[in-house]
Image (cartoon, rainbow, N blue to C red; front, side, top):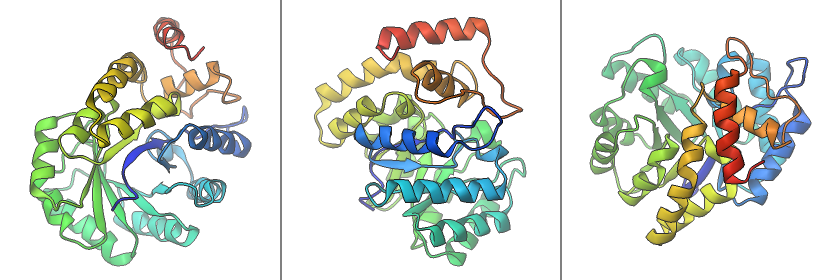
Length: 294
């Protein structure tokens, strides 16, 4: 699926000082991403704090993103849940709202077996006819979707790719080897994004893109076009920033940075996440200042 290639931003959800979704702030962030060459937008992912959004807010953010993007880029709506029925409902809404596809995390907390994971994605694919990108992030979910299970799911028509966030190129290689050629393997870790594409992946769903969209988009363009010197140069330019985005729990550093850049009114995440401490803030400021963001 050629529309799911390049750099997709897992966009943060800006909130007002009262803790509501900041519509204007979100629209401005989307414009900032598109102006800087981002290839696609992912609302309501982990970075968008989907876990602490009500269903109404989730629907609203997906609808607002699709309306703002207005067909200029693909929108891959986060619609995952640890309940298959809830995930089906969110996926149905995303389709009705006009999303180009959905990003579906493996169910977290439940710890399903590999068969359970397969049945979950099969049920979703059968319930809603929309392109599905699965999302494997064991560090957050407590379960690793194995390459063999990914390959089984890849045989289902509308399951078109996976966001692979194990940070393990051994596993990424095995997924690429076992899946059809047109199956989109997207890196879910910024630091493996260039390497993932170099070994046959199609792109990245990125946190760092929130603050440095142009460089992330340019790096993906370079590696996809086999311009490896430029891709490597951008990888090492971005590398300290990629690390800094994980000095604290995602999306805390990304939101803090956007606040310091003047891109959002308030950088506060929702509880149980909270603002970063002074020591981490000092380290973060040093990296983003050296990068030229502030």
